[in-house]
Length: 285
Image (tube, rainbow, N blue to C red; front, side):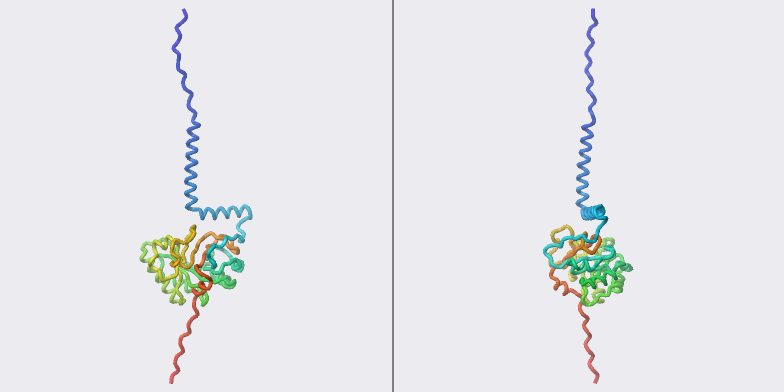
């Protein structure tokens, strides 16, 4: 007799391929990377765009040429720049030919630092017919008097020049009240020295947190980027720094771009006034 049939064995299922699992992991990683990349770009787009332009210029032209040009901001008639040694050697006649009506030039920083290119920039900008002013970068941990003294020794402001500017944006201070006291001291001493009220410069967030309501008697130069207009009433500011990555022919690289709120005559009205001669002494009898 034939042997009884063996019980049929169930075939083992083939092992599942891990391909689909890895595809899901890869897709999730790509999506996460895109989200993080987009968030990083939104936070640092100014710097990323700047590096991208420089890289493109390097590959296509061997570097920035100094002929790049950013369109002027519409709605304003008086445009200007602010510069320091960072901009290198500037062709001021070329700058003046491209609707730059005014320039603020860095003169000093803290209690000891003089900008290496201030003297040349000051001389050449004035010679090119650009209306000039000078600014000091404030160190909150240093004496306001020492910083005012450095600025006064560095800047030969004359009647017809724009008022001095104090740049207040460094946040490395421990006591905001002390910082404000030293800022007020600088402003007071410099006004007494030159006979004209200084302009206070700050960026929007720093000004709102630390300075608003304390220096309202001083004209405000406001830095606020990536906005259609400053998030402050027009009565609060006179100059708006709307970009820190503009291009102006005559400068090889980026420069801050500004507009004045008003016409050129109004800007001229801010200039250092001519010294008033003391009254003649009465003749002795």
